[in-house]
Image: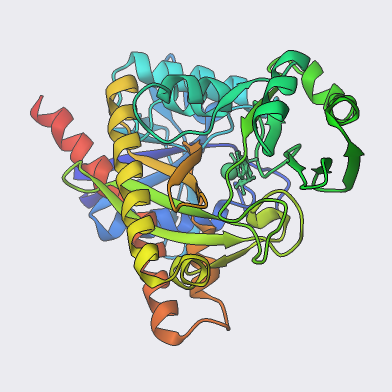
Length: 388
Ligand SMILES: Nc1ncnc2c1ncn2[C@@H]1O[C@H](COP(=O)(O)OP(=O)(O)OP(=O)(O)O)[C@@H](O)[C@H]1O
Ligand SMILES: [Mg+2]
């Protein structure tokens, strides 16, 4: 049979039994695209969670898309390569997913992104420590306690506080010192003003009390901004760069977009209402066309350097999403490294009514490439495995 000779790539995730027609919950549509992209590369993608794996038998009972419909398969032998999209911190699924990660890892099955990277990226402070001292532009970052907070507020006019383990901008807080010596503290829900560092510290420590009581606590970080943070003329934004290895197992910048805040809130996560836009006009408005080109070149260079460093530190990695903010001088700083990067930034532009048709098409193609890339790379990994 034709499928038997095909290399199978297994997508490790979490099943969502209550979601009618969506066996894996919200990412089901993405996994459908994955199955189609794999098929176009003569690969077979299957999707499963930890409970589908039989460790004793060395088999898995996954689902896949055939002729546009989800079908259950197996039991069958374990996949040749794993694409890890399973939860890492969610208490319900993370522990079981971790056991499965370890099982495949011990069996020598290659991963698009190894568990060591996926786990490390969960802790923003630990990730920062691993990349520090390698010449990358990373904002000064420390563990949040009263001592560190006092030092950061004294040293920087613009400071961020956030949970070490968090996503979607949850719990992120910005503190800006104004020319009049006041501190403006912005969370996703509210803005507070205090006069002087002492009252600001009391307020920040009170607002973070719950998050600091969590096992990993919070971090404090130098704020980066394209404009003086206290006198913005433009909405805040960051750049999302998606770096992926291609079919030759070489890094490539698949695409980039700007995420532009639509409120005065401290974050630019799409989940908090930010818009996804082409980066060029956003940067042109702030820096002019010439400097825009330089900023994008440097952001790309920084992303390549970060990916090479991660490869050296953690072993081969297949894809990385980087959140980058350029400063006043146009120097791009890496704010965050994402080990399970989303692709919504590209789809949003591809589907935006405000974007000219050629750009929509361009971002549609970037989105499709971003889905296909892990499978191109998986194919290379499988071939390396076979030749070894
Ligand atoms: N040091 C900083 N300087 C400027 N802006 C920042 C800084 N830290 C965070 N931000 C803003 O807040 C947003 C969210 O922060 P961050 O990316 O660190 O966490 P997250 O988005 O919650 O995590 P994830 O991307 O894993 O969901 C960033 O996209 C950026 O807009
Ligand atoms: Mg982020």
